[in-house]
Image (tube, rainbow, N blue to C red; front, side, top):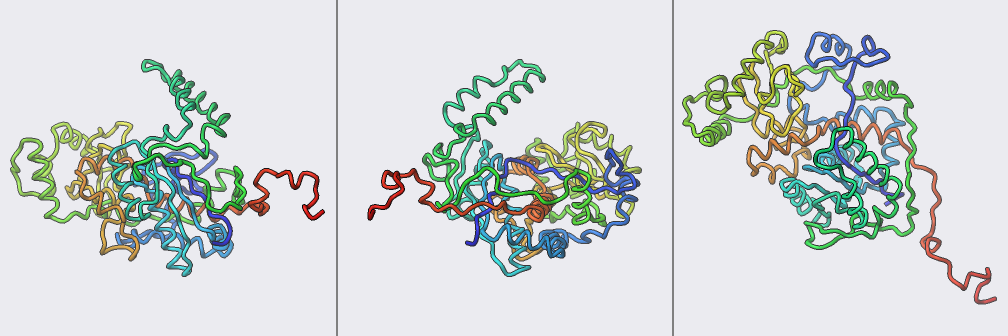
Length: 451
């Protein structure tokens, strides 16, 4: 490989600001409810977004084409990635960041014909079901080479683990006390990370059934390891960054969240029967949508919340198709997910219902809303999610939990592309491996043996 591999460390979720218009994006950004009249008016100047699920699932190629339309950005991305990628992640979940990277690299291959190697070194999650998915990915995508660790705390030196456990807030601590404790622990890690996160530390790996090195050294012994290798050359202020990001990726939404309700009748009927049995009920209706279905599969509390949402339906539903999506596990005016024509933020226990069509979101519908392609007949040839074969066999409740703890793939791909386009490599010397080793006595007097 040419150059050094870029290291991607994915500690958790990514959050991106949503696009706004300069007319109301003044010194302090105001929150605008999605689907509201103000939101619609603010996005009228933007180019139209995907008009079908197939177009939507082609987001990696679409985003790449927009970034690569700028020759400077394209050159920056390709130079940065020419040596490949080494990826590690903690709080991995179902490894959404990994899937985003895979989609991006496949889009680059299709666009340029250049294959960029990517090696996943480790994944980590304390959740047992997430571990099941991560082990599947390691076996099927990495030939079993990628480590899967069960707990991020075990990645620290044993002495550091014990010290931090002693610093943990007491069970009855107040919010302020807990915050102070965590700030002190974070500061201690910043000051002692050189030994607390050591490159020789080993802990139990679920994939290999033995203790493995957590922070494995790079294969190339000529690489000089320093803390910072990349320099940001993009905009300097938050407003400028948001404006440039919007120019690249912002689009006007032309379809509603109803697009993601893709389950067929057979799947819905099977799910409804299983749900009714679990609630000790017999299916009283053959309806696959609407109140008949809701009565069989939803709890009394969920039905009450749906009635509560109906008071807002006239004002918040889509003007095009009447789509009005709610989370029946939360009241209309609670701090939970918003309601409207767009798919809401997914939580681990959410029950998503479109009051316009009467449909209830199945597990696959939830994954689709996050950009995970669970359909082989849609999107690009490479876009089908490799972990779907493992995930689809999990229970409905388990998939709700996993998807509610996951991330939006389009948001991650956009974030990765934007950062790759705005960073360059730091000029660092190429140090030979011999120079990294301690000097020997034969060089002490500056003379060769021949002298």
